[in-house]
Amino acid sequence: MNVLLAEYTTLHDPLLAPEGAAMLAVLEQSFRRCGYTVVKPGHGDFGTEIERIAPACDMGLVIAPDHLLSRYTQILEQYTHNLGCGFMPAALCANKVSTEKILRSHALRVPAGISAGKKVIKPIKGSGADRVRISEALPGKDEFSQQYIEGEPFSVSLVASRVVGDACLFFSGKPPLVLAVNRQFIEAGPEGALRYLGGETPVHPAREEEMIRTAIKSVEVLGCQGYCGVDMVVSDDIYVVDVNPRITTSLVGIAACMEEEIAHILVAASKGGAPDHVHLTGSVRFDTGGKVTPV
View 1 (cartoon, rainbow, N blue to C red):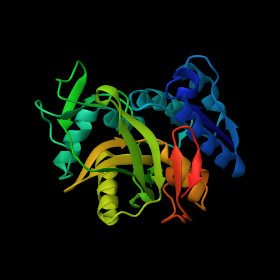
View 2: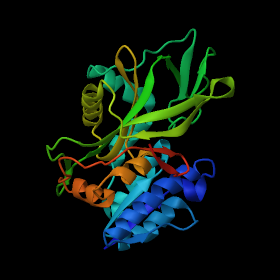
View 3: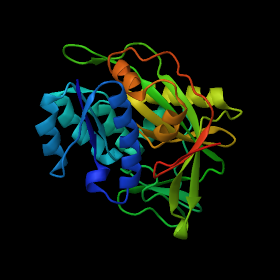
């Protein structure tokens, strides 16, 4: 069977390409080990390449920055079976302000919006730590600001199952599969700019169960499917700071510890049948270039 792995940054975004290449390598190796033929886009227009290749593939997955994910996933879904999040939830999660409102309306804690003093400024539509900074200035065009929370940054990686009906998408009723809780390494650079450096996985902080419940509820209320990463800061409470409805860099570390193949998990989840749990051995640190080091 042919699987299309459409990773955007390795072709079109040199700044993020190392992270994209690391994620793509893990996925490609897993699918090949599971007996799939992996097909990838060429250097032409990304959407046109997906349109060209997807009809000959049995399934496919788009890996792209959040603000582009929905557009290219919608193209993919017209031609083949999607192994990732549907384009509509992806579009919702790309808008960080809308995401925040929905999470808050479901009693999930998110940093408060503030306009004065020390705060975190983010693009309304961004990806990861891109253009995220700590500042006392006012947000610029297409940006918003949140309360700065002093705490520890973590993420929870999950895979949400789904089944596809004749006319629309239905959830299988199965709770999302939790892969791991990950510690994030983030540094503040010049002028408060935040930079994601990688992380450690799996980790077992004191509030692990509460963090997992928060992550599961977050992806469920947003309607996410497939692989998702929920970023959070643990302080006096657990604050959700981002929901990524896509493959994240944490997979590089998780795959190094996980007995199961991520390819099998993604395919099973896309048909409503992800496993109930995975088996992780040891713990590793990973960086944004794909380097993995045992802890």
